[in-house]
Image 1: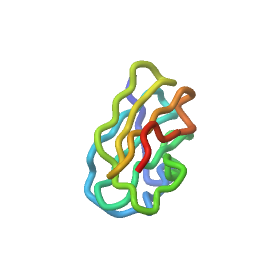
Image 2: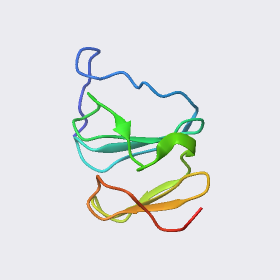
Image 3: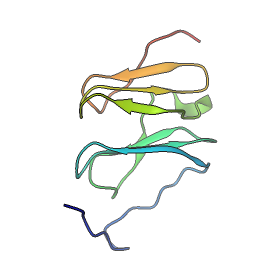
Image 4: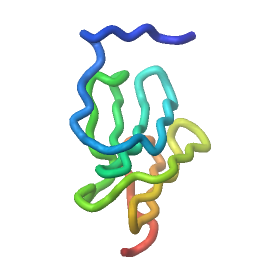
Length: 95
């Protein structure tokens, strides 16, 4: 079932950059990759967005991949990240 969103229940995305990927894993959780910024995520259906990675200052967001709603992988410019709860991301490789 698709949700209908109106301008009063969708938050503004504050980061800039081209879109590199979007994955929605539930009605409330989604991940958006931005090429000149970072990966951002929402846990409230798009009302608020925050950076996914622990240090997003120099991380663009590459491909996103989830095997289920909690387990996913994403790439920054220099780092591979993974999540095991769908919210917190950890670097897998050193810079």
